[in-house]
Image 1 (cartoon, rainbow, N blue to C red):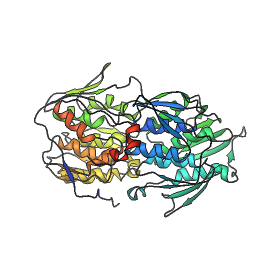
Image 2: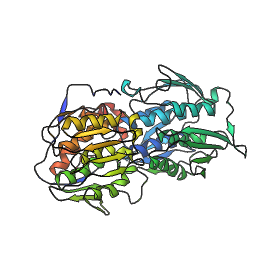
Image 3: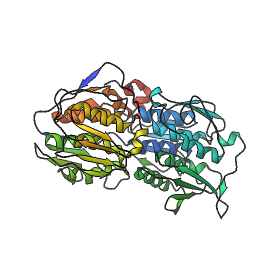
Image 4: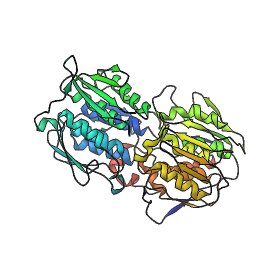
Length: 467
């Protein structure tokens, strides 16, 4: 498979510190929770107050999509909070720019299926290879009309909402409820999109996951956030849920720090030695980043959870053997884990992550290519990657317009002098001001403050990708 390059001529010199790190890191809010909160607020019964929302390119595009569909974002005196005034009806007739955001592609499409007209969804050229067929097929089964703009199964796409046309018949269950299947083998976001939009379905409906379901924690997050809003979604089997038309209540939503983005900073404690604390780590969470508590000790780190946050500690010069991991539930963490495996004392195999081929780039091929470029070896498997460590040397690391590959480059640079990372600004997709936060960690300085949605609405250039 061919994977596209990052583009651009600018490279960021990844720092290689000469001693241990000792830092406390403040991270912005969870992209996954923020995106779901925006959908909930848009279709809620009353205004929804959201605190701690992530302000990044992905979430800005998500917010603009909700505004396009009829919601209103009101910014509070407290800069960390905003209120979403729900749409009285979902409004068609406009275009949604999804950028590279898979959540906007999937969640925006699901809401567009219930708009009162046609909605066109477009994306960055680099994202036009991200598949959407399974979700479109399910939306058609619910009664929406789908017309592809260039290639069948990919954006751009125009969706004519159910209110704008006669509803098609769907298959029914024994109790007369409608039943809609969704092929989840390539992404759990398809199921999350249907679950989040399910309060808009006009009658009780069973949503059934078909095929393997990767990244289960993201589905659990969708279900839990709906339950906290009083939405009636009941499990009817291992992989099916019945939803009754119940609009979200509009209860306040507090967004947690993004724990997936914590990985590169925690990895610094392993690669440099020392201590890194991520502030405000939740005691209980559905985020996939919760698995760092289990993963880091397998590399030899000491992990402790306190009132301040999660702390990872390791002695300078720490080594670790390779690991064999099934990462199907938390594949989003794979680029960080792969970076650590490059410096193991024996080969590693990361399994259950074949779905990473459908992210911002084919992450399996991208990781293997850059690992080989560094001087180690890697082989892509059907559902994962096999990594064979070897001495590394400084190279120009390509990122393929993928924020996780950009942080992969920063991580390997901690132990490999001379690494330069292409297009480091792509980290603004989910983690604006990454380089400032990275340098502050290595210097033991305070993390920069996080952006707010009010600031980004006033000046979108803040999350343009420049670093």
